[in-house]
Length: 154
Image (cartoon, rainbow, N blue to C red; front, side, top):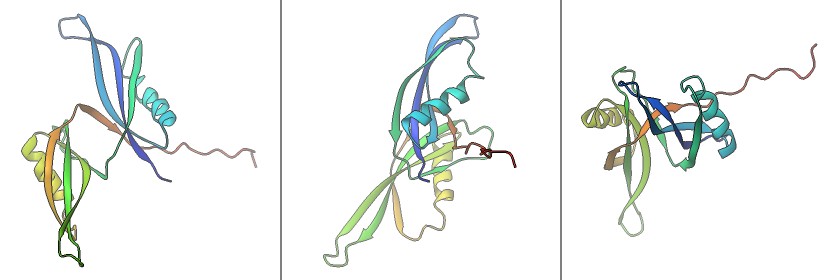
């Protein structure tokens, strides 16, 4: 089974602290097998948290090699790190860099760098952080396999 990550955006009326309704768009990350399943799972996950109507406005594939989550309850922000792995071409002796995106949950930028370092411990090859940016992702929903029921009772 080869699950992928999908960034899903939802638009809804959010009740502000003043009591006024404001149109809000939020981004979430969903692990699924296809766009269709991502939308279905996303709607299931959002339904309990949003009162009233909401619209899924966008779904796009997100190329992520890894997700490093934090156990710290204050870590409510998500950072996308572009990590370059450094290898040497044996024939030419030239340095080659291969990049991957990694999502890191953290409280701030410094914590995100530390979380990335901790998650990358034990990596055999050399690597460097090419970039680190905060994302608009609010939460991450991992794949949940549906419980399989036998077709016929035995």
